[in-house]
Amino acid sequence: MREGDIINGLVKGLSVIECFDEEHASQSITDVANRTGLERATARRCLLTLVHLGYASYDGKFFRLTPRVLNLGHSYLAATPLPRLIQPFLEELSGQINESSSAAVLDNTEILYIARASYRRVMSINLGAGARLPAYCTSMGRILLASLPPAAAREVLNRSELIAYTAKTKADLPSITTELAVIAAQGFAVIDEELELGLCSIAVPLFNAQGHTVAALNIGAQSARASTSHMIANFLPLMRKVQSEVRPLLR
Image 1 (tube, rainbow, N blue to C red):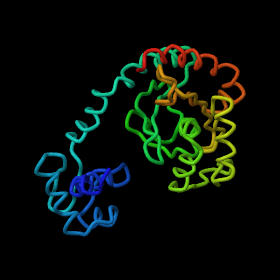
Image 2 (spheres, rainbow, N blue to C red; image 1 turned 30 degrees about the vertical axis):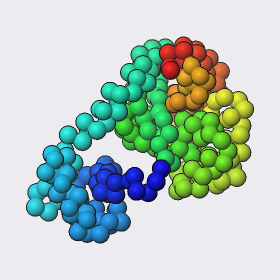
Image 3 (cartoon, rainbow, N blue to C red; image 1 turned 180 degrees about the vertical axis):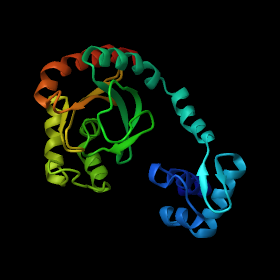
């Protein structure tokens, strides 16, 4: 792609939308400029354009995104069959084990949840379609990173902010790289309290009919209810079944 093909104004506008999150739901022009690295005047024009188009509101001091922004995400969901296709499988899987299951794709250094069947809340944060978590310390993230060529996975890790969320978090390149090699060989990933204390999860890749990894499937549970060894023995066979049933449906 040539640099001349890029619309810089669109790049800036999208960066403004993306700088709003749960902790920064209401922001001033200065806030947005600081979070995006844009000049204050540029941030102001982007924000006022979003207000004009109905994607943001303005009370004279602070800007907030409006529900119309959901149209952008809906366009992806409407154009992509995977979320609609996988949801019934997640519902059935969660019903069998009485635990939550999810599907996600890799988006830069994060995983993006595209579908979820929530049986009970297992994390301190709310997860659902559109939620994001770091790839390097999540079971789905490691599955998706392990599916990449090693050089590509390392490039993602080099751009990631490696934080030790708990004493068990693998947050250094050598440890994560070794773990990815193990995951690629065994075909599944387990996380034992690396993202949040008391939380375990297991994930497998979802392949399309051509054998390419297109997403990841996981089950998360409180470690008091389901240890990683319990997940491997009891959940993994069910996840393998979903994996095989979904594969011929994805083109």
